[in-house]
Length: 217
Length: 165
Image (cartoon, rainbow over all chains, first blue to last red):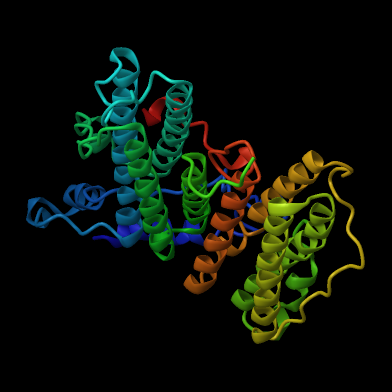
C-alpha cells in the first residue's frame, strides 16, 4: 500500500542530469519539472480502496520515514513560531507597563536594549515563518487532508520573566531545533535535505543573533 | 568556486554514487581552500580579539579542508590541490572590509556544501550540514546580516508564501 506513494519519492530521488534540471552545475536540487511528492498517509489507502473495495480499508498505512521527518520539521517550526510570538508579546508587555515582565527593579522592554530585543525577536520570527512556508511547500497532502480544518497552533511553554531569560530560552530552543533537524537529514530526499540543512544553519545563526557567542564589537 | 568537472570525471574509480560523492566533496574542498587563503587576508587587516577570531576561523577551514582531502582520497579520488592564490570577491584595505570578506567567505562555504548535503551517504550529509551550520554561525559572528536560508540560492525556494500560512 505504502509503495504507491513511496515510489513517487524514490523516483524523485533519482532525478539527475537527465531527469530534472540541476541548477548551478548540479549544486541545487530544485527539481522544478517533477514535483517532489511526499503524500501523507491516507493517500495510499484512498487509492487502493477505489480499486479493491471496502475490504482494503484496514488500518492506515504507516507514513514513510521521509514524510515523518518532514512532518516533524513542520511541527517544530510551528512550535518555534508560537514560542517567538509569546516571547514577543511578553517583551512588548514589559516595555509598555514598565515592570510587567521584569524580574525586579529593571523593566525588560522599555529600555533601548529592550527595544532592540523586540526588533530582533520580530526579525527572527519572520525568518521562521519563511522556514515554515518552505517546509510546507514540500509536503503535498492528498486533497481531503489538505482541506481539512487546520490543526490548532501548538502551545509554547510559558515564557520566563525578564528579557535575558526570554532570549536565553529562545536561544536554547533554536540550538535544540537545529540539532533535531540535522538528525532527520538521512531520512529525507536530497532537495529536502538541502532545505533542512539550510534551516538548521539559520537556526544555529539565530543563537548568535540572540546575543550568544557574538564577537566583541 | 563552482562545482568543478574533475570530480565527475572520477566516477570511473568506483560506483556512480562514489563519483557523485567525490564531485560534491571536491566542490566543498575548493571553497574551504579559498576560505583558508582568504582568512589570511582577513587576519592581516585585524588586530587583537578580531585577529584572534580570524586566526581561529582560519584553522577551522583548514581542518575542514584536510578532512575533505582525506574523504576524497578514501573514496579513490584525487583531491585537487589548492591554487597558489585566489581572487577575492572584494578588495580589502580596512578592518571593516576584512569583516565583510569574512562574511562573504562564510557564505560561499555554506553554499559549497549544498551538493554534499544531498548525497545519499548519511555520514557525508551530516558532515556537510555541520559545516553549513558552522559557516552560518561564523558569518553571524562577523556581523553578517541574518539569512533565512543560508547557502540556498533564491531560485531553489518555492513560491510558497500564502499556502504556507
